[in-house]
Image (cartoon, rainbow over all chains, first blue to last red; front, side, top):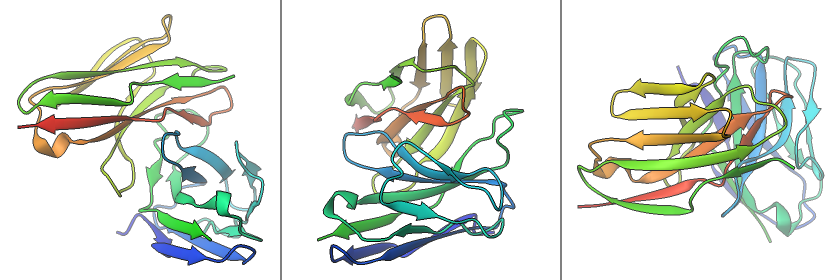
Length: 116
Length: 109
């Protein structure tokens, strides 16, 4: 059981280029999340999806888009990358969003993105 | 606004006990989480508190006081492998996690 996988592990990207970060989970969790982590700041939510076919905006959605065509995959796209999007990106998933239980979020290994 | 405060860095000695504090001000409260994150790795779940009191799990314990907006993570019998960042997160009224910046714990022999 892999849990959550992310690809690529790291990437250097020229400003203005389009980039898609991939995230796949095999736990059949209904909720998935994309965070960015920057030095000295807490994890910040970019976009989330409570179930396949639905998505929502988090705290810092500008410049990013997501889709959730099925339960397992939740790609994050940077339409035109800018240097301020240099960060470590984590995908996470949880079993439920109902609050009826812990609903713990489990994280993928992350993608380290550098935009020059 | 919403805010989670934790000390930036703490140092402790192998075999000792350390307490990492977390204070929060959020719009609503639906549970508090502690995660461990080793350098270059993903956060991993440690503990969850939704009611006041102490939750013990092996060498790690977590305490919550909702009236004070306060939690702490207690690590006993510290080992070198406990050197990591410890992240406090609160689930708000929208069931989203609000994260602190993390506390970097340095363990010295």
